[in-house]
Amino acid sequence: MGEQTNPWECINGKNIPTTIELDPIIYKYTSPACRILDIGCGSGKASNLLASLGFSVTGVDINTEALRMAKSSSESQNCLQIPLFIRTDARALPFPDAAFNVVIMQAFLTTIVSKDDRARIIREACRVLEPGGYLYLADFGQTWHSKVYRERYINDLPVTKEEGSIVAYDEGTEEIAYVAHHFTEKELVFLLIDNGFEIEFFKRDEFVTRTGNRVNGFIIVATKL
Amino acid sequence: MGEQTNPWECINGKNIPTTIELDPIIYKYTSPACRILDIGCGSGKASNLLASLGFSVTGVDINTEALRMAKSSSESQNCLQIPLFIRTDARALPFPDAAFNVVIMQAFLTTIVSKDDRARIIREACRVLEPGGYLYLADFGQTWHSKVYRERYINDLPVTKEEGSIVAYDEGTEEIAYVAHHFTEKELVFLLIDNGFEIEFFKRDEFVTRTGNRVNGFIIVATKL
Image (cartoon, rainbow over the protein chains, first blue to last red):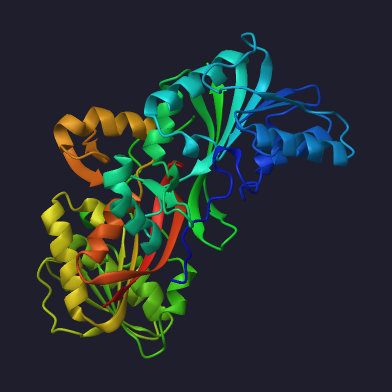
């Protein structure tokens, strides 16, 4: 099918920004005075876009180098707002309850190997949102119809111990570079509804990676209950 | 979310034709002289459409009343070809090997409760196809983001014993009218590749039922190996 392996580009904030673009549906859930938190902002593509539109944006990531790139690129743009970039762990955010109106999380959960950590991250996103606030979540879906991904899910299972996860190896050392998880619809839905949200908008999409692979994706807007 | 339950309309060929329309992708895999078999043709909507376009079509179903409707509606149309409607069991088709160029199967597997029967049906579809022939398959996907379906999957599990299946009850007698299964991508993909096919085309779609519910769906074209 002409597919290439290793389409990930922004795991743990390393390397190049992800190819997932912000879906315009987000603008239905934002207003001009909105305070937006971008969890796992990586090199700041979405944060800087939203800041350039005048939103008040805070981007957080655990990766110092990614944050340096995010700051540098915000300085080179003429943003209406200057985003605030903070190094922190998404499992324990340094913000008070209800500090934000909207949280965005793009291709971030895919990098979190532990199911418990995923739940903690969603609960933290919920805590820092105002009641009725929105979580915009875009992430990868399991792509069983693709021979390349199907074989990776099966072959990598002994290492990842989780169906739908794949391993990327360092080309030089052949050591594990990172593990990424692709979600089922059921997984993402229960991750949200078990941790304080209800589903407001749900779209099955297809993301095209830099190497031209087509991967299932989900775009979800969830409301804090 | 304003959703209604009981969206199915054509289980075991009863009642009204299904709301799933033929995706135009099918015309990429058909040629004028094509012999098409419509397995689980119900009241013949797809069979009659394809016959009206000049294809040689055979429709099979186990339900006599549905076949009567199919014949009646083909007679009232001015079809270029008259489809042949035959009552038969899809697990044991009365056709020789390689008798058809294309098999279509729309919202049919959803009605098959037994996993073994689903596999037998796909193997039969494979047998009656010429090598390199195409199976066009459209069916329902598990729709976890919908509260209505999520709750039905969970509540009906003790009865159906299969995740993703739902029970429809007769409104008068409150007895079980039918069980329908919604598939995961993984289920459908392995059902095909384990029984003689490879995936040629794959699309995640959304079907809207007569009552306005939105249900995940898959449209797949698979090639006989």
